[in-house]
Length: 77
Image (cartoon, rainbow, N blue to C red):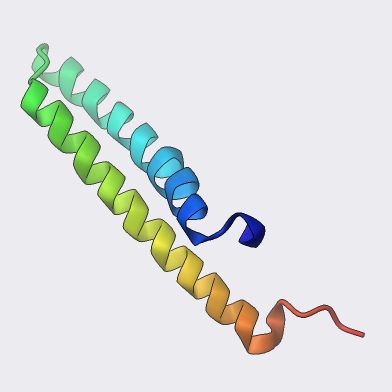
């Protein structure tokens, strides 16, 4: 994962891996509950979930990088 870089990780695992599925489930839930689609809410949910996924992935990346740089990622000889 490190070879792909930070930006690829953020978009692949944060936005596409967490944000989009979360927003799809949330939109489906609200559609079933309200029995109607409110397009402004759909767009807002996709943007909000994508942003939260991006921030979550950034935090995960930073934590893993700090752990790696502390020497835990180095192979033992």
